[in-house]
Length: 87
Length: 264
Image 1 (cartoon, each protein chain N blue to C red):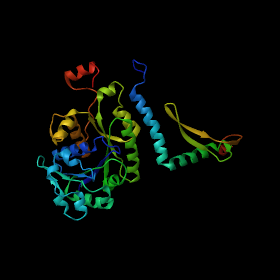
Image 2 (cartoon, rainbow over the protein chains, first blue to last red):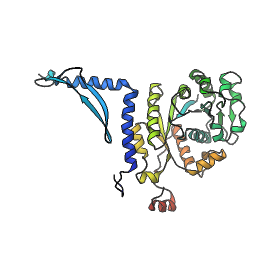
Image 3 (cartoon, one colour):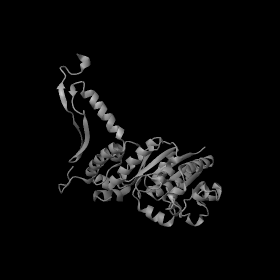
C-alpha cells in the first residue's frame, strides 16, 4: 500500500476516510439503527452476564484509520453456565 | 405508459445535467420518445447543455401556474426525433412548485413519452423533493471522490425513505490511469461502499467540455468515449444486458504507450 515515497496510496486513504465518515453518517441519520443494535447486544450479553447499572453503552468511535464499535457494559455478575436456556 | 426516472446526486458539479442531456439523446437515438425535465428552478441549465436556450417560450412554473398548457411548454429538439425538453423557470425559486404539482406534471408526461428524465438540483431540500416526487426509479451520479460518494450515500438513504425502488449508480468522470496508479477509487471500491447496482461508467473525456461549449451533447457524435458510455447506459435503462467494458485498458497503440509512461 506504500508508494516509492513511503506514502500510502491516496485511493486507500480515500476508501478508509469514506468508510469512517459513512459509518457515522448512517448512525446519525438513523437513530433506530443504534437503538436496535443496542437492544440486540443487550439481549445476547444478558444470556451470559447479569448486566448492571444503565445497561449497554454503545458508541461508534474513530480510531486512527478505522471505525470501532465500542461497548461499555457494567457487569453485576457472571451467570454460572452462560446461556440460561442451556442449564 | 412511460417511465419517470430522476437523475440525482446530492453533491453539485458531478455531472447530473450532462448525464440527463446525454442519456436523453441516447434514448431518443434508440427511437424512444423522451422528455427531459429541468427541475432545477431558479438555476436553469439543461437548456444550455442541450443548446435549446433560444427556443424557450414557457417553462415548468408557467405550466404549474396555469399560464400555458404542458404541450406549449415542451421544446422539440430538431436535431433528433423524439427528444423534448420541459425547461425550468429561471426567475422563480424552488418553492414555486410543490411535490404534488410535480407529480401531476410527470403523470401527464408519461402518457405521451416512453421515458421522462427529471434532472434534480443539488442538495436534499425542496428542489430535490420535487424532483423525486413523481419518479418510478432513480439514477445516482457520483464521481470517484470522497465528498461525492458520501453525498450519494445520503441520497440513497433518502430515496429508500421515500420508498423509491433501489437506485442504480453512474460513476462519472472516472480516470482509469489514476485508478491504476492507486490515486483514484475504482468503480468496484465505490459500488462496494455504496452497496447499490451499477448501471454505467463514464470516463473523463475532454470532449464533454467541447460539446457542452457548443450545446451539442457528446452522445450526438460517435467520437466521444463518454458519449459511447451514455449510449450503453441508455440500453441498460431500457432493460438490455450490456456487458461492462473493461475501463482499465486504454484503446490502441498510443493508449498502451501512455500506459507504459504512467499517464492517464
